[in-house]
Image 1 (cartoon, one colour):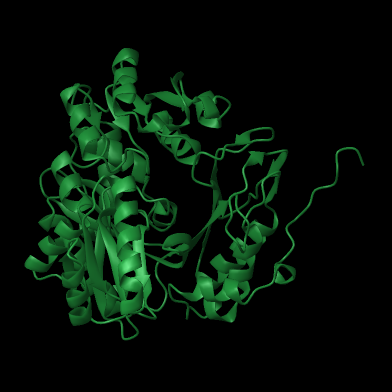
Image 2 (cartoon, one colour):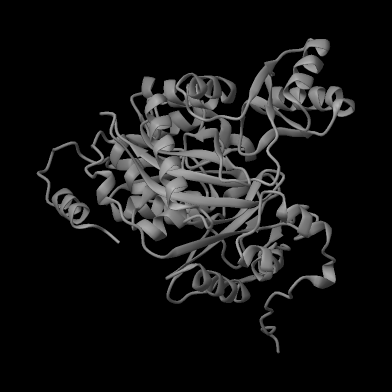
Length: 481
């Protein structure tokens, strides 16, 4: 997978003189669960010591055990307390902070406070986070640069003006929070009768989640696919992409299954999207790892919908097909190193799928916290599991329901699907209810296997499925038997 040029660069890095832009000696991981474990593992491979922080609800979490140091920080929502995180980093002698995803990962004020405290924030600059995190401002920036975006218009509290602009844009349409992210703060409005209620609900949610009441309307794209490009950039303005991922299996704008590369893309469309993704990163003054997200219509027309200034949950499939360690790349770039490779040095191999295993009912999506009594994950060629679970660990109700990410890398899409099905059949998590049966159902449908799915497919499938239709997960014999 690694080209000769990239191999040469990697070899040069291993043998670089001591003292030349040194990688950090100690990094504080400002997150929890599987992503904290993921970051700790990459740091260890780089020879970097780690500091874990943990809330009262996470005292028995795996990341606490794996880190070189672990510091309690207080109640369950303490991960959002920037001052506590920064004080802990300084007290433990950490030189940098890796935010993972969620929590403080896209918080420009936190990134800025890290800098003021003499800490390196492993992510983009505060200015870039603010510019890209403002979804409305980012769309205006991209549109001004001539990049393809869906028609949109900013709206305020003037009800009559909102109604007039919505009518001009045309129904159905999307109502979005300017400061939103992670699929939150989005409502689909089918007609004028729904607009007023959706507007007030979304504005209240935006104020509560993002401390920003601003909203905008965007043209709704039906029967679309969700494709995103992974970009990498350094402080000298060099930008490359590491290919695309298809994230069309989602519910309520939350991704569930991702794959790389994206099926059904004509080579010319893929190349055009890649050029737009790289240019979008340049326009935004982007550095480190980021994602440019697109929607594609039925005719392969594509539009940039947003940029994400953090590591994505689905970064694993890109790692599988490129051979890159994206967390290590983030750390390296944050330490001031250059990319060290060109676009032509990046190559791709095979096909990868990721299924997000969550503690939730597979059809209602209601959360299912509890204690994990027993757990068994698959293994073997092509299988990767990112998780923080072990037998006896608690799954608190305070956090996101993600328990594990099952990844399979095969020679082609057919092999990847078959390998993923086998891997999922071996997953055993006793205690919380999980969505593994839903994953198995999706992978068995002709629509998915023939790559005819769009972003609305999963919700249609769930409406048509009864509990009895779901595949039965594997059960291990009782220890007493």
